[in-house]
Amino acid sequence: MNPRKEKEVKIIDLALQGGGAHGSFTWGVLDALMEQEDLGIEAITATSAGALNAAAFVSGYHKGGPEGAKKALYDLWFGISAASALLPWQETAFDRVFRNDGLQCSPSFLALDFIMRMWSPYQLNIFDFNPLRDVVAEVIDFEAVRACDSIKLFINATHVKTGKGRVFRPNDITLDVVMASACLPFLFKAVEIDGEAYWDGGYTGNPALYPLFYETESEDVLIVQINPVHIEEVPTEASEILDRVNDISFNASLMPEIRAVMFVKKLIEQGKLPRGKYKDVRLHLIETQQIMSHLSRSSKLNPDWQFINHLRASGQQMAEDWLKANYKHVGVKSSVDVEKIYL
Image (cartoon, rainbow, N blue to C red; front, side, top):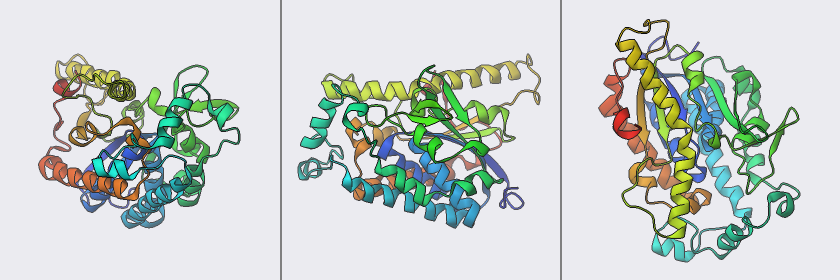
């Protein structure tokens, strides 16, 4: 049982998108949610950086409650930033001057971006060097994740050979599962699990919502969306086009599931499906449109601690604003205009 359930009023599920360093925004969101004492979390579905956040959160929560979850998240992102100092790409003084928070002025990143179009990690990274793996192994107690009976965790990865998404259930989650969910195929070799190769889950479920429909009781789903749906202007520069293609690709799997949710809701409202037998899902959203739409694709690989903390603070503030405006809607109705944003 969730230790907060007895005294709280409202229970929600969380859906956490991936997005590299942009996932530090979600760290701030989770910190803010833990400050809301009458809000509980039944389950989390997550992908890529969202999976890192979720696994750290569940591990820390199982061992030390809300404060344990917050500490684990801090340790995770501090460790990521520190370990990333070993990577060849770093933010330069020019990036800081122009305040683009990306790596567009980093010669090593520009060279790497070109090289990745010519050679694969099987040729360039033959020893599969990934400093993130050591950080995750040190910070996250996967036995605690599997043992946690207060928060269910679902993590999505992409099966390379079939192109299908696979959702790993709570008892199946290991270090390899989390690393598979966050495996960028242009940087790292595919992660093998039970003899099968997996890539980043963002290609097939960012995140996968359906486990929350079938395996939880809560009818409220809060999506923390890292990749912006809308932008203000049509991109014309090559880098801008790549950025937009990246956003669209990592939102593409989420759209059909949200359309399915709305279709079922309408059938329930029309009396064509029995309420109770089918879950009448209420959707909520914390999105990063104002922040992420101005950031480049390269900033997802920016490990700078100041940048990560900026996004964490932004996430915390936006979550606090969401709670003030929409907590009253939890358990009552959706607090997001789904048709306007997604349909």
